[in-house]
Length: 163
Image 1 (cartoon, helix red, strand yellow):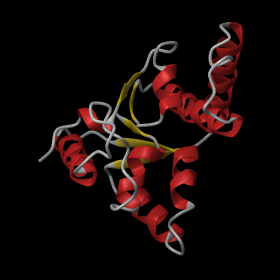
Image 2 (cartoon, one colour):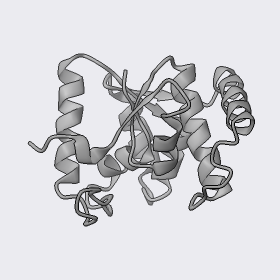
Image 3 (cartoon, one colour):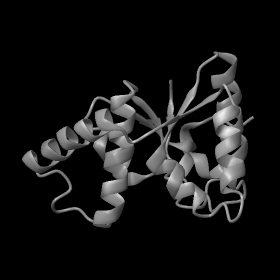
Image 4 (cartoon, helix red, strand yellow):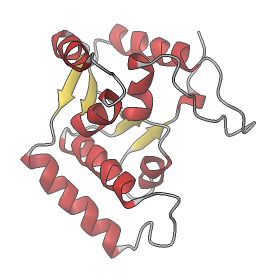
């Protein structure tokens, strides 16, 4: 089951959200919503379920303005989505992730990322790993960087085909 982080999930809640930049041009990526909807249809056609970590869901629902219950209800009722909670298994995984990051001094000298961003990224990664999932759809550079240190593949929107 693929995992959606907030940068991918955002386009379901707000299709006209600010797109990520295309690494090839540096300009805003075009047709982002179409790419995401095509991906969802492809996932559905394979009878797979999209995992949504609760930390990613929280990030997205901040902008849902009055439609929080509506979005949660819709996601919970759909057989194509699974909201994965930040439970005890995810907590244990987060501890492992954090220890590995500190042991390897990953991200120490980086940091266009705030500590808060890194914490969300780690929680999303921990939920994915606790769910035994290793494919994350994300345009978040913090999550993309973790791909090198953990057994995950991070797929960015610019690599998704257009309709």
